[in-house]
Image (cartoon, rainbow, N blue to C red; front, side, top):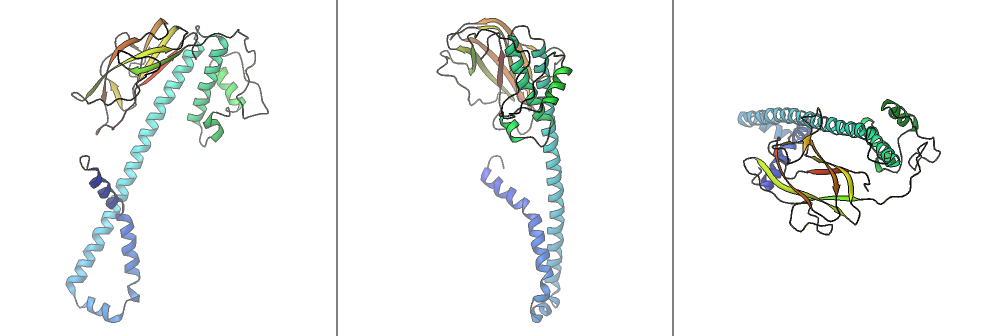
Length: 303
């Protein structure tokens, strides 16, 4: 089916249609009393036809039971995988919150802004149903929930109640700081001429011995250097690190984490950093046709 996708789609459609066929046969069987009497009499006189119909009904009915059972198991498996992914994302959100709470590099205003955004992500992951405006980022979670989570994280500030719920809550005791120039970092598959104008974010890579080997780099776009930089590389939930990129390390006490991290004192504008050789393996079989390697960063003057 993987080699012949058209055949696979047709086969999958016929397979999932079996329960519907079973209902159709039941409807036909229930309407036999409307058939002309001579037809029914001829069927009763033909033992072979009756036997064939009996076996046909049994086969389709049994197949419908099997298909329904397989579909239920497949749905439960997908729900389990989805739950595992949600747990992984939730663990990453909690780790980022802890890092923001203890961060001494960012300004207080920037730190609180990112911490508030992280709490919104946590609210989305832990509540169902979710307000579409919160999901779209135009509305913040309830103030009491936000204040409770801030207290649990050891923060001494809260959010102010606001009658206009379409805007993010304002922060009490906001620190006034003069505007500072911001730096932005972009990640790219490595080429010798990577700059802010030719970032490469999609690439076809053939596996070697079940592993994907690639080179990536990072560059500061604009004219402002990035100071006290921390970079995280994250593989997908169906991937595993086959090697440790040079200079990167696992998160403390998180050896099984999907993240690898490196700290740099400074990144100059339009100066290529790297390349870093990355090697990952796919845990799922058959492997997905596409996967994602994500890059995150934080610095003293991030954008």
